[in-house]
Image (tube, rainbow, N blue to C red; front, side, top):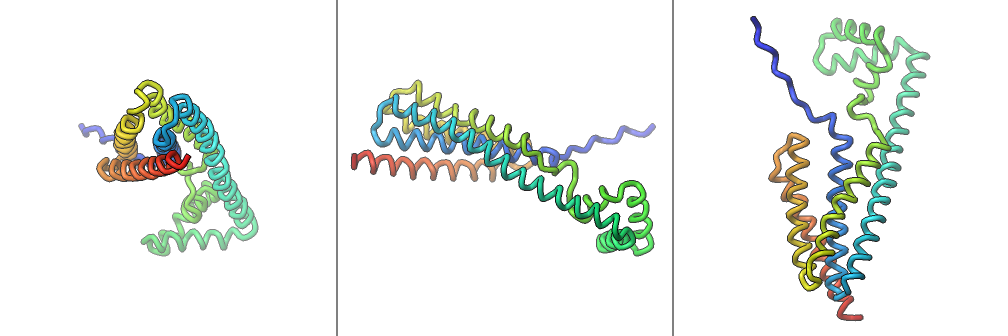
Length: 232
């Protein structure tokens, strides 16, 4: 009796939503924490700090949603245009398209005779799908989904932004800068490790990457807030 074949785990099907979700959460933490730290460094009141943070949360979530939707929609439009062009070419010059497919498989290592048989069988089954996958590099896994990307970015931005905003609401005002900065770096490190795990990658580099840029952003905004606060 043969042992059951082990189930292979792949993560590429997560690329679409994972990229948008990580970008949204990271931007939510970094931009909101930086905004809070910058306003607090200008010696503003708690009310001013929270109003700035809440406005940043709403504006950032909407901006992320709109940006992702427009960007991914443009990608989807390009994909559809390529498919329409390929569909027209298949109708107009099927022999030329078959030869094009054969050459792709030859370049990948098949001998010419086998490549022709494979190209012919795939063309008979679904010519457009074969060309979309092997000529254009399009697949169901990587197909652009604008609404999914927009919702994932907006939701995760709001969640990420709510973390430093909640801290700013509960800690004493003199401790806002230190508490929000340290906690946000911890949140970013956790996000880096979580996103690396979801994508099947090592966490060390992801954690270092997000915490470095987060620390830099908060340091710069704190310096600007201190500078302009002193001027005012």
